[in-house]
Image (tube, rainbow, N blue to C red; front, top):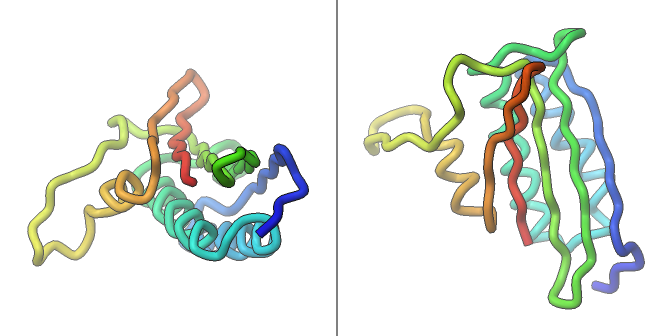
Length: 136
């Protein structure tokens, strides 16, 4: 797939609610379907869904009871790279992957993110935190 864009950035604000992850997925799919390969898009959507879900479950909202989702696509000679960033009001603990047993119902989100991303991390400031991931 040829990519006509060298770098492009988007962002959206979604509710700090379970529906926020669904809205983020739909927005990503609409904006990136013609920009990046389908397999990369599926991974990006999975990562954003996990990060927004974690923000809703484990962190406070930004002012306005929202979560900000941003993404940047860069065209490289070796292919596209997508960076996603989910910003919330912060949590008492820094997000980190957990080790869970096979019978646990949840707790695998950041392990999934780590498996799909080239790298990921957390940035914190006085206003909240952003969890980001880079995929290619």
